[in-house]
Image (tube, rainbow, N blue to C red; front, side, top):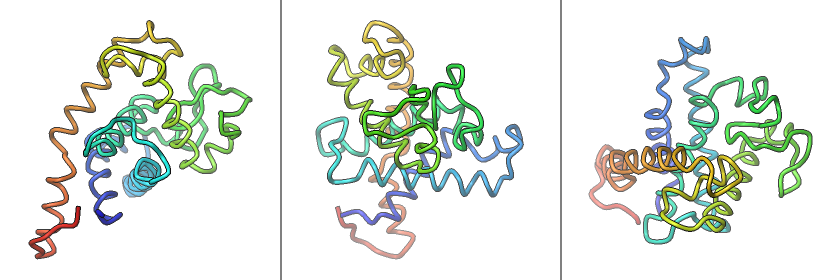
Length: 199
């Protein structure tokens, strides 16, 4: 079992590649506040995707790793590089009807889990979990290549926003190749002077 702090550190390396802390100067956010917020987002993604009661989006030995990177990539794209305003609910897309970093299009309604928009803002884990469930449903809903199936997440349909789905999927897979968990884990354990790792 990989230690949670290693998983979170790895996820943060992915998140920082998607949204470097230098963007804080553009978004007028305190750099330390942004760094702390991105670390919290990384922790929330790990908590949901590596929850044993949640099914990964992909099968295979790296299924959860691949799932986590895809979730982070979608959250970054949906929220404008993890924008503080989107994260805190002061900025919302689709005319104010889309909530939180996963931009869940529920307006004044509720998610399938029964959560309102303010619930998603108050507890980001609810945001990530609900978005994760929608991503899983999109994969089941849409056939064809893996890279096409998130069209339903973006547009609600399998035949709309396919190009966007492909772009985000390819972005995620590029990140996965450059920021693999095994490499990060090895480096993390080596920094502690350990020669063995727990899978």
